[in-house]
Length: 126
Image (cartoon, rainbow, N blue to C red):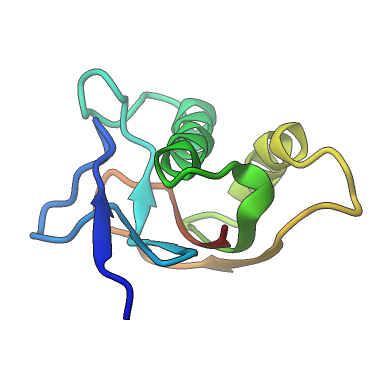
């Protein structure tokens, strides 16, 4: 079996001893990615900034893994308000403009920890 490689992403840290992302062979998996500010680690004022940070982190994770966002197979998106799905769609269309080259995605309204409005989990195949 391939060795697990932890991918460290500055600014996207967990409160628990869990890596943000790992690569095993040609697979990339993430824990819950949050949209904290990459410089300060603090949550941004607006949900738009939070979601933009999430997509920035996904791009960075894929680059660290030796791939690109074209290798993302599936996203699970959790939002605290169904209206946030519209904001996610803005960044989604920027990252995946070709309707014939998008990963699958499932969005659910959920009760996230205090201060979070959106979080994403990702699976990719390199």
